[in-house]
Image (cartoon, rainbow, N blue to C red):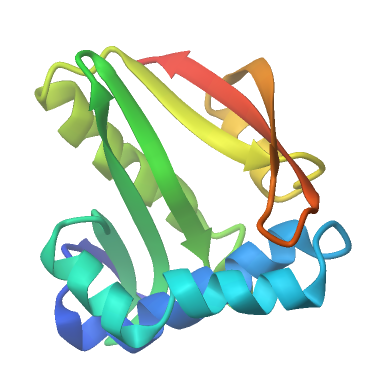
Length: 164
């Protein structure tokens, strides 16, 4: 296995859409209805939107095993000195191999170079894949954010942050 971390191109659209769709569904499994999951995936991870988001820089880096997309991270600066990790997913067959760490390190260096000193992430409450990952990298719980989906389901995000 030879993993490379690179900037995504539109030719990676399908791989990014698949990883993000599967990863997001795993984080909300048993918490949000199938109806909402289907609607959310169709909105955020349809190929047209993913392709446009790649062109607009919404996906920061991908991990490739040969030519296969096996991980993705999207991040940005939300206000001066504050960065946000919007998405970070790794194909489940490639988890626990350090790929998520590599993606996070790469985007963190970029944010530091842009003057970011505090990095934020939202993690679905009960996400036993994401929570230990972020906590092991110095993120600490800040507060809960309660929202309601357009299908009137309660969604609880845990806001985590760390100094970088």
